[in-house]
Image 1 (spheres, rainbow, N blue to C red):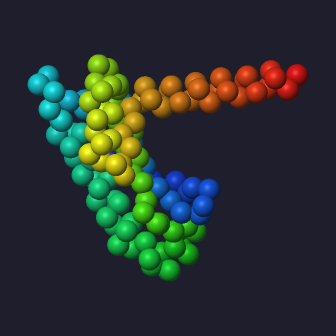
Image 2 (spheres, one colour; image 1 turned 90 degrees about the vertical axis):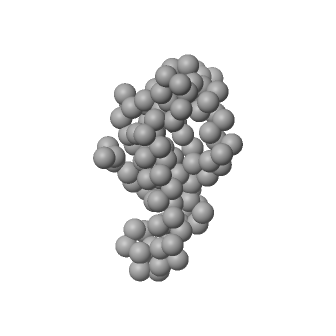
Image 3 (cartoon, helix red, strand yellow; image 1 turned 180 degrees about the vertical axis):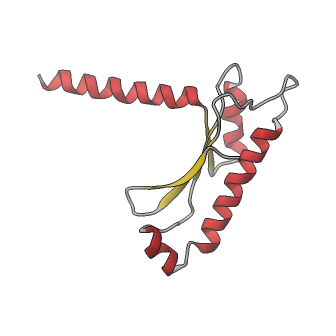
Length: 125
């Protein structure tokens, strides 16, 4: 069961799909194989993208949601990075329209943004 899934409107008025799973969900087993939880999450995001592509041309749906879908990207937030950095990056090769982000990646991105904003604020003074 997903923690949540939602749509994120981009600057151009179109939307991407975000699926959030638990931070303690394992991505790979001790043999390096994708776990059933991770596999199911990937399948869910694929299904959501398929539905968005199928219904994306619906004018009624677009008016209801206040945005449209045009080749939406799937963003899956799941698990921790651990020692699987390269394996996770390599999945991007296979799933070019699905971005797999761990909670560690979310924290890193947040810290980068905060540092950038703080540096920008210091330069203005």
